[in-house]
Length: 263
Image 1 (cartoon, one colour):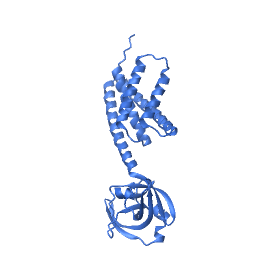
Image 2: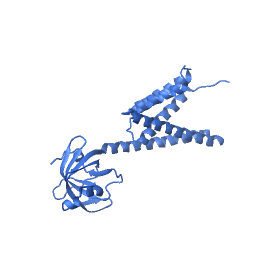
Image 3: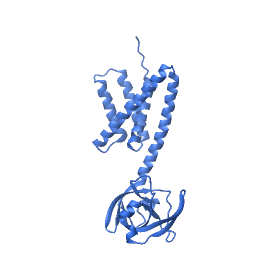
């Protein structure tokens, strides 16, 4: 019996799956995207798979496949340490197994009804939708990662490590002085005991959800991770600062986020 090996089709399938799995692993682990690097690595590994399948090497196929995966994941994400690499490797393998299982299940369902062409078209459509979803999701994750900065709040001799979010949609300013106003969570204001130390300044706000007045207080120092500081700045207290509970303060413009408005 003659066995035909279609190297071009095998390359295309490997390339698409490598690229797809790099995307979905990055999305799962909230890794930044590197499209050009991933395309080149996916193509290189696909070529390597074609060569390994076409020619008989002395090394076992399992060792070759493991070596390919290690190089692919290490170069794709370039982890800072071994622990992170192991996490990425296990996630990649797990998602590979899940994806292979789903493809096999769909193939069996459609094969029984002789819908091979329909299965192929459906697979292409699903991959297209998933690629679109993953690219948008990773882009959103990248934007959020770039918008969130670590900071240290110092007030009345107390120190607290917090995460600050730079939000271009926050244009809150004081109508009395014209200075930008940050927004902090209720929990952070209670930690700083703002209501006990000073009388609030009422700041009017307008948003899609409505309008009203926010209580604002002056905070002593906000130290950013780049070494810059923001001193004696206004911060309004909100009960609905963010759906992400890790964010405790929202900065309202880029210069404030970088700490350039120092007192």
